[in-house]
Structures are given as structure tokens and as C-alpha cells.
Image (cartoon, rainbow, N blue to C red; front, side, top):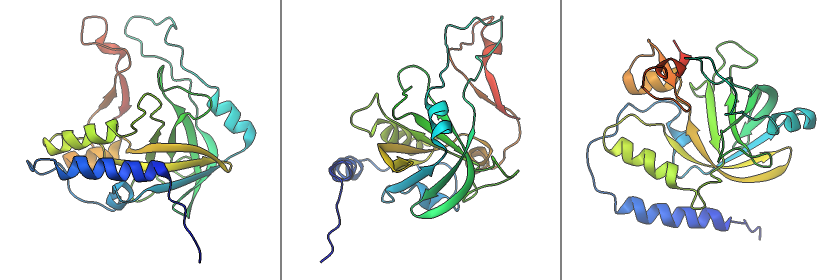
Length: 225
């Protein structure tokens, strides 16, 4: 008889989230409408993400870093030293690619061994998407031993009627090496804006060591628009 191995991490995640969410009070309906990517972020869909890329590119990717001590001109945003590199990816056995892959993170979440990652579906083909998405974000959770803080936080925001990314969990492999359980997070890009606001026009900004004080507001980076 064939026996299937169930990861102890998967068991703990399922039990913990089941207890927490069963006790969650009902409240305002979540923001946004269902779309073709809903299943990709379903809690009971424990993804298996397998990435293949040149070992040379993988080493280059994981050793890139952001220098927060870099000098900036007044009103200048941080330079993004992370670059997308070509890769192939499969999600739950379905091959997708070629895609772009880059490192993600700043200080606490930055890692050379199991970095957070961004997958870009329109890397090789303009307008390329997967289930309507142009990107996916895989967070390594190295600052959260429980692995569930981000999921529960975004769930709380949505229960409160606030726009927040969808997310679930993924087992991530790179070139056959198991990196561990990551949080699979909906990237805040135009598809997200279209889903939660019913339009994707205007500007989207990202802040990194920013503030709304005089001399700081121009350091916000325009991500879309």
C-alpha cells in the first residue's frame, strides 16, 4: 500500500489555523469579488512551488542585498538592487514559464539560504499572466516561527472590510532543494487594485524607511501608474 508523508509543519498549520478561524467572529463581508485566482490562495490549497534556474543565477540572486546606509539625495527613494533573473516554475505540478525570479526583503527577512522571492509572470512575455496575476510573492517568515502571523493579519484586515492581499502557504523548492514553508502572498499590483477597487488607474506607492514629514514624502516609490 502506498503511504503518503504528511509534513508535521502542515499538520501544525492546519490545526492552529482551524482552531483560530473557527473561533473568528462573523462580521463585515470581505472586500472584493471572487476571481480566477481565488483557488490559488485558498487555505486548504497547500501549494508546492518548484523552481528551476541556473545555479549561477541562483547564487547571484540570493547574494544580492539592499544597502539601507546608502546616501540619498533629498526626496530620493532607495535604489532597488534586486534584479529579475530567468527561471522556470511549476505550481502544484503545472509548469509555468519562463518567468522572472528575484530576491525580496530588507533587513530582518533578508537571507542568502532561503530568501523571500518574487515571481514575475510577464518577464519573458509582455502581458503574461497566471490566473490573471502578473506576480506572486513568497515570504520566508524567518522572523515568525509560527508561520501564520501574516496570514492572520491579512485575514483580520479583510474581516474588518479593509483591502488586503490574499495569502496561504507553499512548500518551496529551488533546483530540487527544499527551502521550507513560505507564505504565498498576492502581490499588490494592478490585478490587486482591480480586484479590490474595481479599477487599476492612478498611482500606487511603496514606502521603505519613509515618512510624511517634510523632505520625506518624495521618497515614496511609484510602483504602478
